[in-house]
Amino acid sequence: MTQTALKLSLCMRFVAAVCMAGMLVACAGPGHPKPADLGPNTALINVRPVWSANIGRVSLPLEIRVLGNQFVVASSDGNVAAINADSGADLWRVALGTKLTAGVGSDGRYSAVVNNENELIALEAGKPLWRQRLSALTLTAPLVAGDRIFVLSSDRTVSAFDAATGRRLWQQGRSGDALVLNEAGVLLAVGDTLVAGIGGRMVGMNPLNGRSRWEAVLASGRGTNEVERLVDLVSGVSRSGSQVCARAFQSAIGCVDAAKGVLLWSKSADGSQGIDGDDASLYGTEADGKIMAWRHSDGERQWSTDRLRFRVLTAPLLAGSSIVVGDDAGTLYFLSRQDGTLLNRMSTDGSPLAATPVLVGKTLVAVTQHGGIFGFRPE
Image (cartoon, rainbow, N blue to C red; front, top):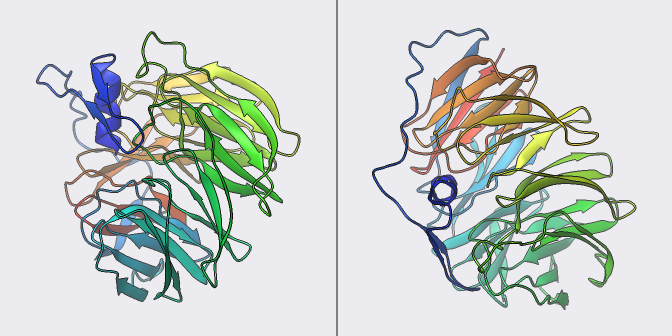
């Protein structure tokens, strides 16, 4: 999804969109600026590869679910695996025999994915448990929490299911713009509140019945057509206590106090990938490959670097004193959190990164579109 997102940004308004069940199709062309040659790699921090594995090709908007010292991943062909981050060995692996559009959610006991027939598939300890039909195409990984599985579908419907039985507990539909973004959205738990991205709004819901507790608008569509007005919140948020910070597609970043349902601030930003951060700073990759840092308290810019400009970048990951991003050539870049200085870079298998890298214990894990899973140990 990362390549599509940057092409959308560089093509600007020359984009076709399809409603609800459809895709955003970006124009491709030979005129895109080429990234600058970075020259020989000068390693200012030590990063070593420790293991590699494979899950199968990944073209869905994958979310790698971290659970202590293990993580759960899925492939587009329906392979789902829980893997030990120290060794790269499978804890369990199952082939579901169906194409997936979203995954993977897990709480360690139950895991969940969605297939291209709009079925939510639940597993327990790696064994298929049940399937339930959803209302529409789903690209956002299910959220598994409190013995429930929550789903955000592309028609902006949020549903809840009993994790053990598959019984539908509730479903809340939302009217909205006819067009939706072909990207994973925002769905997480903050205390006893279910937080979902609905268009350009962050919505706090009661997880027991789906009723809205609050809504905070991060961005509003202001273009001249439906495509330009797309401001859906995209997957990849920064959470510090009850404060949740997110990006609205190619329009803004902002922070919400999820305990009070209050928008703290919102600033214009031109990017299509999620953000990461801590209680001091937020970090993101912009549409043209610039990497930005903003002050967490008010969104004022702290620094930016164009060292990786025109590369197709993932959302960033905070890992110790570094920010880590991946690109469409399968390279991981380690940059200083202080000023964006390039500290090191590591190669995978040459195919684009399929998901934002994650930190699992002391191991940094990256997954590529060819299905390669790579464990690195920053030191």
